[in-house]
Image 1 (spheres, one colour):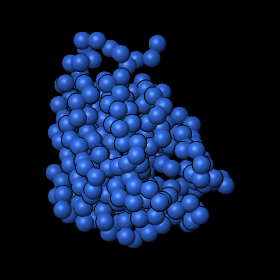
Image 2 (cartoon, one colour):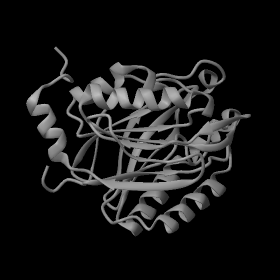
Image 3 (cartoon, rainbow, N blue to C red):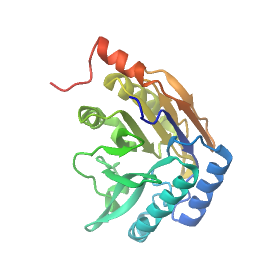
Length: 254
């Protein structure tokens, strides 16, 4: 995969529900501290800028066009790609959409398919089949939080030709073992590199579990966060994925 981005990672941070200004300031601080290598693709937590501010989700969605441009400008400053999800108005409710932001502009969206049971369904709608996004010379398949429990979502993205899978989430600490097990499974069964970023700290009366990861096609954890705010990135060897797939193939449909 000559010419393709070969460094990926995550920006694990708390998300303050309903306070875009604080969340953007937090992103700027974590980027300044991380000093990412140019060309790196970094994944952020689900709804990193607004959180699940259910009653004011429509108002948060109205800020998304400006937020996308602000995020792209920030990514351009560091020469990186920032991947995250944003609320966007869709009929009476909102969608939760993945975008890739860089100096080249904004790529996306790819929408969350499966909405978590409960209050979330009152404000957010699921979408149809997710689409690949392009950045850094890569075809990137993004899925969001609860989508992780549905293997057909990741499989569909792999079948479309994804080079890399990314996951953005606000996954609770109480089910963090599920998070790690399912992420490993999605990487192994699709024979693909996977980057997943979770939120951390308190959210909606619960505690998010952190443990953002980069996982190889063999299911090996290449980088892992802890419980707090932190970032990490690693270089990928695309030849490892190509070699594995050349020896046997388990990820194709049909």
